[in-house]
Amino acid sequence: MNNTAKPLRNDCFALPPGVNWTPVDEALERLRSRLHPVVGVERAVPLSQVNGRILAHNVYAPRAHPPSSNSAIDGYAFAGPLTNVPCTLPLIDGRSAAGEPYMGHVPEGHAIRILTGAVMPEGTDTVVLEEDCEVIDQELHLHGTLKAGANRRKAGEDIQAQDQILAARARLTPTQISVLASVGVESVDVYQRLRVGVLSTGDEVKPVGSAVTDWQIYDANRPMLSALITQLGYELIDLGHVLDRADEVKAALERGAEQCDLILTSGGVSAGDEDHVSKTLKAHGDISNWRIAIKPGRPLALAMFNGTPVVGLPGNPVAAWVCALRFGTPAMALLAGGEWFEPQSYVMPANFSKNKKPGRSEMLRARVRDGQVEVFGSEGSGRVTGLAWSDGLVELDEGAQQIEPGTPVRFIPYASFGL
Picture: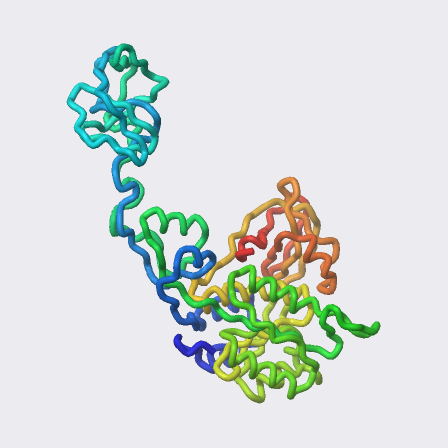
């Protein structure tokens, strides 16, 4: 584990006495309240290397943007306002162009040629569009009124020097990097990349490319979770696949605790004879099995092992995906130094029928077509084709619901999780 940051408490995932089933919102709030950044800070990282990184400190502008008043158009600059029209203004020799400002003073009652982005010469504050005037014998003929300051960008109208331009814990995007560059920020302090280990377990699971029998399945979880980690901008530590053997599981977790800030496992987190992930975490770590009122999903093992947090996901790929998105992505953002987030959702009309029973939240694989939300034809959590078919989830709360076409439902696109 990264020792440059404050570690999590060993009992941070413990449930209160008597708690059995945990509603989704309550589980999310418990996670949010018990986690904090576990990574250190990397100093003065160049802008070319910070895309997707999480900002460690507030950033203040070293200069204004724009630094000088400048013209928003090609035209002619003079001192406004212009109210007594039609009129003519003598043109002085010279011009102001972007990167080549006019260094002299424009006398009152005179005008000068100016181009888009050029600094406003001393003595001017207003620009007329060249299509709205005409030049005859070195005189500018004007016909319409103009307010003082028309077509001028004022110095600092976007950013003043020493303004806070970005707040700590923001994930840097290309547009934010543009803001930093616009005021001359060359480098920023960012959190070190969260190192996330991914471990698959199970005697029946074989890595893709291996020979398999009819009673074995290919490992879909490790490639899926690995792609999720890299797409979110974290550093992937591939811990491989281990059989349902206590010694192998323990050895893999020990490797992960040495190399990772967080470990994601899939499979082996229930209470069966061969659920060695939960048994190993119970014997050698500090584990809390959260039974979350969610479908698909339900078992979610949260543990500390040798000082490193472990999230034990269900073995079923659909349940693993839902739990990794709903619980894993905001938790990882917080551990990585960012803000805990609730994914952006949209209320849209359903294009399906469903009689939902009370008791658990349900996450349905869904997609939007023609302004309506449709769901995958089968709710079976073994139907991995529904993952590729969908571009988001419909989340139904714990209560009973009768949904018909046109009923408003909550749709969460995968993009809301940072994908």
